[in-house]
Length: 387
Image (cartoon, rainbow, N blue to C red; front, side, top):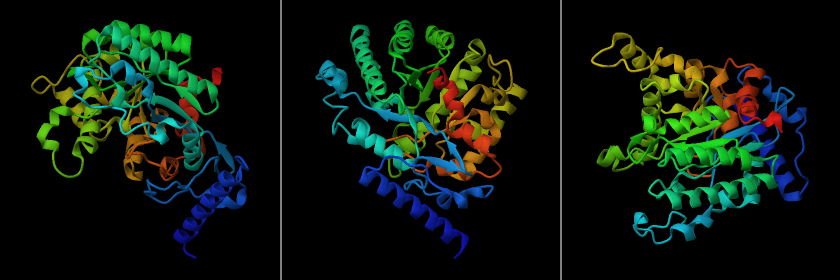
């Protein structure tokens, strides 16, 4: 058989192994050499593996070594919030939990089975971006966040070997957000927080958000930056292709990160553990343009940044969710292996169900570097070694 046929057969064998394990109740078993002998190649997996079908169920073994896999980009929902907001005028009659509960988001047994099938040992759970209610006034916002973060903590406490919580905060009230973050970390055991790329049109680099950034740096926890579309795209995103998502989301992250660089936020808070979703949007792929503008000071390009924009890529972490081998290879080249962590976008339509294979498809990585991207770096950032 050809190499491609051999690899397809090996993938089929892994899927059959998982199917047997899950349906017979045999639990999770470590695969033997017969299923991993094809993994000795320098690239391990052919270029651009399928994003919809997992080739590496849990446990992931590479060249005979068990790899810890941690997903930083995994969402859930807390529908218990609905009674707090039902009928609010800001919803304009819409229910953000309908049609919900989405079983893959809220049913723990379904989630764990999916994690096993896609090779994920642990998820850092965050609230779906559609359940961030930045319109909420202070008292209501406090109730919403308290409930969301407590429910996240409860689920993670029941399955500490599979989940850790990344809480939510009311960033529209920056001082409240800082106190919410501290409570979530110190009282509920959260390992950080997820925020959106802008707050009702305000850039998160705006000075009014400094109390939040200062608290995040002080607590030494992850801030996961996740977009919520780019409404300024307006009618330009209309039509086929769901451009508001495939272009708007990474564009939102690109703009947010660029402001954090050029407004000097990353210089004021150099200890931030900032993790950017979707590979940091378009910023790493075209960082040379930012560097050129910084260097030439062309018509106001130079901002408050104290170094070249590309230097800040080593100050930001990026999830691996860029969908193909060459893009991930380029992201690693620009930011460095040390700055890349695993991300899937579970459980929604843009999820990469084969994220492990994509890491293993990048040429030139050694096993130590693969281990760092798959879970080693996140284990340190999430302080799992302290548990």
